[in-house]
Length: 182
Image (tube, rainbow, N blue to C red; front, side):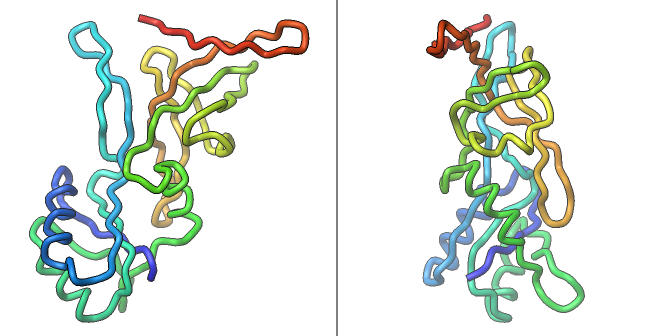
């Protein structure tokens, strides 16, 4: 089985998932709509929101055949299966591996804990731990990290939620405290 990308109407990703689960329930298929948790400021208060990571895309892992391809084309709100001139294009394993690592094989990318060391940003906990090379910046006010993600031959910049952690060095012991700005 290989991963494929379906281009759907933005905002209709969950409807497409439900339709696929209902109509193609007899097929062995995994459906993934990566989402992210972020903090938004509404009315002077911080609110936790879940937003789609790649709006307009639904990822499926399936054995693509002509029969499945034509069944997918009948799904409402599905614009097209991403393809080249002759056949559907599979999502590269290295691209999907990053998304699966971030989502921890679920659907939602949780918050990461980070701290700044000079100009470098270090991830101490969460889904970005170990993927520090893709981090571009940290927005202190919005509590978000901006990362680079390669997907379907394009480099995208994506905001993910993160909490800033202050690390103090006392003798040779590190004490970690989470700073809670209001």
